[in-house]
Image (cartoon, rainbow, N blue to C red; front, side):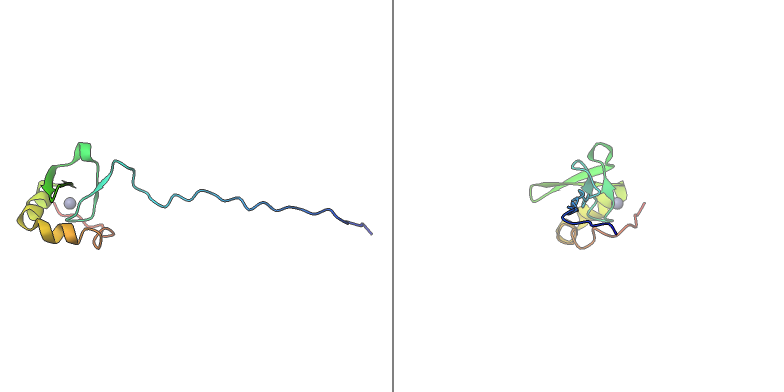
Length: 86
Ligand SMILES: [Zn+2]
């Protein structure tokens, strides 16, 4: 019989870094359709209450410009939506 006395194994709990955010710091969310937009490739931008919003298409910018308050307020709620309008 093998006596494994005092051979304590210290199991290290490796804390892996979990990437909680998939979007980079430079990526902005299109408030109209929720799509991620690279500001350098945005089809359009609009400023509302001092903040700049980026859009994947001119159609999204047009919709935002018609009712910027509504889209700006619902930006967080619609962030998970993946559909995009052309
Ligand atoms: Zn869009």
